[in-house]
Amino acid sequence: MPMVKKANIMKFIKILFFLLFVTKVLLADNDVTKYSKAIQLLSEYIGIESVSGNENEAAYFMAKKCRDAGFVVEYINDQPGSVNFAASLYPLSWGKPNIIFHNHMDVVPEGKHENWNYTPYGGVVDSGKVWGRGSMDNKGLAIIQFFAVSNFMEIAYEKELPFNVTILFVSGEETGGETGSMIVSKVLLNKFSPAVVIGEGGAGMDDLGFLTKKNPVFGITIAEKQNIWLKLSWKTDVAGHASIAEGDYASMLMINGLHKLLNSSMPVMVTQEAQLMFSSLGEVVGGVKGSVMKKPDSKVFRKIIDVISRDDPEIRDLVTNKITLTSIDGGTPTAINQSSNIESAFLDVRLLPGTSVEEIIAYIHEVVDDSVLEIEILTEGAASRGTMPEYFFDMLADALVGEYKNSKVIPMLFPASTDNNFFRKFGVPVYGLNPFMVSVEQLKAIHNYNEFIDVEDVDRGISVFTSFLSKVLDQE
Figure 1 (spheres, rainbow, N blue to C red):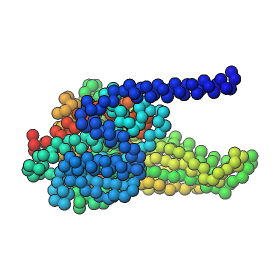
Figure 2: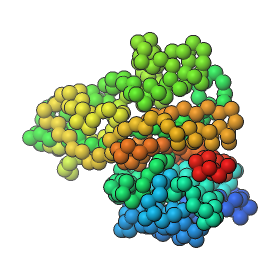
Figure 3: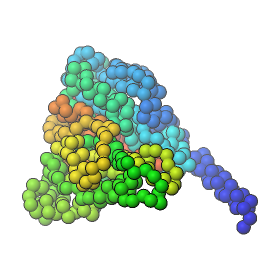
Figure 4: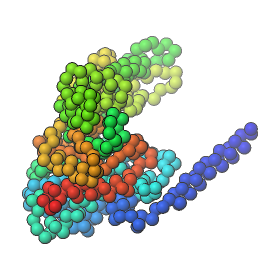
């Protein structure tokens, strides 16, 4: 086929796909005015691009919404790319014990727009879902918190409640928290008088394969992994013509080292938090399987979990540290026939509670076993610590069961990292909860194309947090 005809056909196909995309967007039922005020605000909020480092517009937008709703707004800091503010029922200066909800305003980059079913910053509402970057992570949660706490604004004016309630909006969570929660945490005790901190984390699921009963199970996060970003570099004196290169040039050393590291079996470690989670799951599962799970410190359980974790990545992430290769970068530009003397690899590392940064670096050196390997820490998140369930956990659990009948609630070790770790070091109870059901499809869309949150999730999430606050504020 002539090249001109091929080019015309490809051009026609591209135009056709574009028209299909536009048609789908135009036909979408995006009359948000027929939905609740919460959905309308979420749609508008998603429309503000707030990729990490560019949260200012989103921050000022939500700060104004909070002021208009009657919140006392106070900025912790206000810098380009680093805006953090608190919206409270009462002034923070009153020093009242404080129930703190927190969320992050930043989102990860949206990628290629043509890979989205709906424009990533359109806040399109269609098929019972709100679509767009940040809908699930983390703007949906922010709107849930906003409307739940707003329900107590008039009551707080009429009489003095036993607690202040604050919503904390932070920057930079997606890039490690240095421009957000790290800053806020330095003034947490003195400025906020925290009684409890509740951020993102666990949620509800009803399609867990190991459950014998198909009732929803909610996990309230009591611990998260620590995030570490590492740069591994192989530097050698060998840099010359590729035709005479041997096995000691940087590219080959890097490939061999990464092969050993990424194919090594991380040791299984059942932390105190994981033990509590598995024993609680055992109560839900029941039967012989449940009996084994209820004894996570037994030899039988350890043997079983060691076998299961080899084939089940979801279980493996709960009982092992995780090392993920994210990118590779050559240190110096070279011709194809010239070997480089430096190569680098970047790792995303997630550490269980109790594992130190020094221990994981020593582990990497031991496995790679290469004297020329250099390891640089690019970002070090807050160390992972746990919160043992107490009064506020029980109140959250009661609120979930009240909204989702026949559901079960368990303490959860979160296999990823969140800003919650910044606040746990002060000994304050800290929990992570997205107060709604999530599907596997929803989870896969986080940090991916076609991110969404169900309209029902937002409305029911508001109901859960409203019920929780009613119990704690003694307003039932």
